[in-house]
Image (cartoon, rainbow, N blue to C red):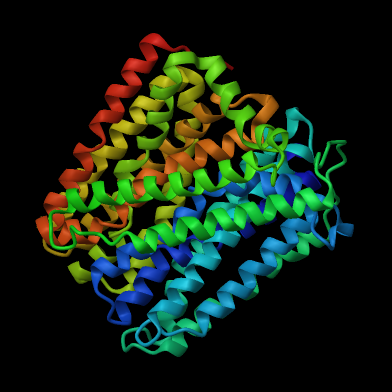
Length: 485
C-alpha cells in the first residue's frame, strides 16, 4: 500500500479529480439541463460535438509541449496546467450565467470553451504523470489518477443531478442550473491548489527548438488553422437536412474532411513560405506518426481503424441515455442514483476485471471480449425500451452496461499503451485517444435524429450491430499483427 499512499500518488488522485470533473458537464449533465429548458432532442445530441475537443487534442499538444507561457516562472508543465484549470473555472462560470431556453448559442460557446480547456488539461496531466515519477511507479500513479477521475465523474454526474433535484429541477428554473455549474466551478479549486503546491517535474528536456519569434509564429499558425477549419465548416451547409441519418452522417464526415484539408493546405503554405520552420513541424507532427508506421508497416492502417471504431457502440448509445431515461418516465433523482452513482462503481469493477483479464488471457483476447460485451449490452437497452418502467430492470441494465464498458475501456487502455513508443509517449497516446473518440462522436451527434427515425428499441439494436466490424478487425489483427511492446 506504500506506493498508493505516496505523496505523488495522492497528487495524481487530486489531479485525476480535476481532470474528470468537466467532461460530464458538457455531456450527460448538460443534456438534462437542455431537456429541462425545452431544447429539442436532435439539437441536444449535437451538443455532444463540443466533446470533439477531446478528439482533436493531438493537434495542439505540440503547442503545449513547445510553447512557454509568459508566466512560466511556475515551470513549463505547472504554468500550462494552472492556465488550463483557470480557463475551465472561467468557462464553467460563463456557462452558468447562460440560459439555453433564451441564449442557446451562448450555452454552446460555453460548452466548447469548457471542452477545449479540459482537453488541454488532460494533455498536460498525462505529460506531468509520465515525467514526475520513474517507470516502476507509473502503475500506481495511473490507478490513482483513474480513481480520482471516476470520483469526479460521480460528483459531476450524480452529484450535479442530485443538487439540481434538491433545488427543484421539476419546474425549469435557470437559477437552479446556475447554482449547479457555479458549484462545479468551485470544486475545480481542488485541482488549482494541487497544481500550486506540486513541484515541477525534475526532468531535463528540451522545451523547444524555437526562439520566441518562432514560438509566436507556431501559435499564430495553429490559431489560423482553427479559424479556417471553423470557416469551412460554417460555409458548407448540409444539403441532407431532411434525408436519412446515414446520408447526414456521411456528409458530416466529408464536411470534416474538407475542413482538415483546408487547414492542412494553410499549414503547408505557411511552412512552404518559411513562416514556420519545416524542421519544427517535422519534429512536432511527422516523427511520432512515422515512428508508428515504421514499427507496424502495412498493418498500421488496420490498427488505426480499430482504434477509431472500438468505442463506437457505447459512445453512440451513451449520448441519448439520459434523454431515454427521461422519456421512459424515470425522474432525475432515479437517474442520478442508478445511472451515475451505482454506474460509476460498476464501471470501476468492470475496469478491474478488464485489466486483470488482459494480464491473464492476453491483451487482444480481452480486447475482443470487451468489444463483444460492450455491443451486446446495448441489446439490454432495447429490452428496457420495450418494457414498462421498472426500477429493477433499470438497475440490471445499467449495471451490466457499465461493467461491460469498464471492461472494454481497461482492455483498450492496455492495448493503446502496448502500441505506444516510449520515445513519443505523450504525442502518440494523445493521437490514439483522440482518434478513439473522433468517429464515434461525429456519429453520436446524429443519435437523436436516428432515434426520431427508428425509435429507441431499433436504435439500440443498431448500435449493437455497428460493433460487429470491431470484432472482425480484432480477429484479423490478432492473426497477422502481434503486439509490439
